[in-house]
Picture 1: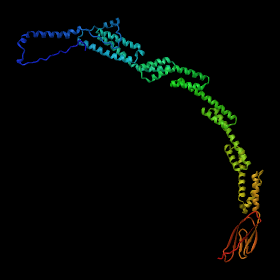
Picture 2 (picture 1 turned 135 degrees about the horizontal axis):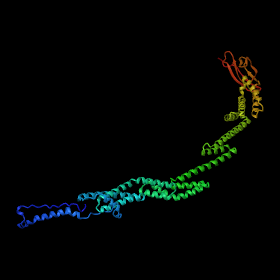
Picture 3 (picture 1 turned 135 degrees about the vertical axis):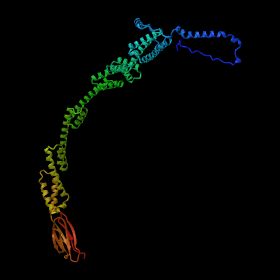
Picture 4 (picture 1 turned 45 degrees about the vertical axis):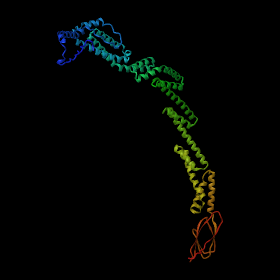
Length: 504
């Protein structure tokens, strides 16, 4: 508290004593000096309370900023303040109130100044902050001269200016970061470093500013790498250029120039690969290697979808593949025809027709192969089962089939052999065999498909090869029955004994 405040008066308690303990008469004798002493003390108290404070000089405001106090206000400012009404004589309490008000504003200002200086205000608002400092110093000057109202006015003005600057911090920080990134885009390392350094001075924990500063510090090396990459790119040394662009992106993942370079290289490499693949495909097509051509054209189509050259190349390849497949199947069908492998020939001609239904040779070959396949199957069936010829109906059909086979122009070896085999089978089936029968001259004999032979002891018949059932009957005896097969290709068969021997 200031030295001119009232000090509390100390009251000393008085000890009361019983009558028998009263002071001796000598103390009573001194009573005439008591009241003058009281009056003197009262006068001294008045002097201390009312007169002494006006004689003690005010203490000066302690400096918070450690800045030198400026000279008194300029003459113009003095004149402005002089035009104001002179301060009336104030009592001590009102002076203290004004002084305390100015002091409170000064304390608030010092806090604002401390915040601003922590935010590096002199680096982004030096002129504005200098006004705050000037007004602070003027106020301190007025305060030191006990002009408390003027001091409060300037401190209040400085406080408002400081508050305004504090309100600008966020926008200044944002604009500074933006300036840094703009400088990075323009590859200006110096300007970018300056901007990000200021942003970190304002806000040391700002992530964007930290990243930007790192990018700015790497920028000289990045520019060297970019120049080398672009040089390789101009010389079509695409792999080396791509490696350098990747190194740039490792140092600066946000580098737009490196990203554009890689995109440009990717397209150039794609175009190069496309040209090489297309050339390889065309060479294979010209050489008639349609499988290789198709494979290369498909690779080219994967690189550039539906490119007109690729589409046409694929169409030519498909036509070539189709023609090659038809030629291959035709060749196989002809080989099968020459080998009289009619089933295989039919299969190949069917595949050709399925691939291209407009080919006449395929339809003709298919029809001819089917006829020969049918003839081959029917002839071979009779050759494999000659006993079927023992039936007169089958034998007649076989003779017709033989004539059909003999009518085939230029028969192959297989058919010629089949014709001979069928002729022999027909001849054997069509030649009668002398069959000898024996009996007891009591049993009545009958041969199915031939007729009743009656009773005899021995009889010979001319029978066609085949199966026959011979039955013997005699009264009082069980019928005798035999089934015999007369083989073909022999002159005689038998004797066959047929008689009833089992009584009923």
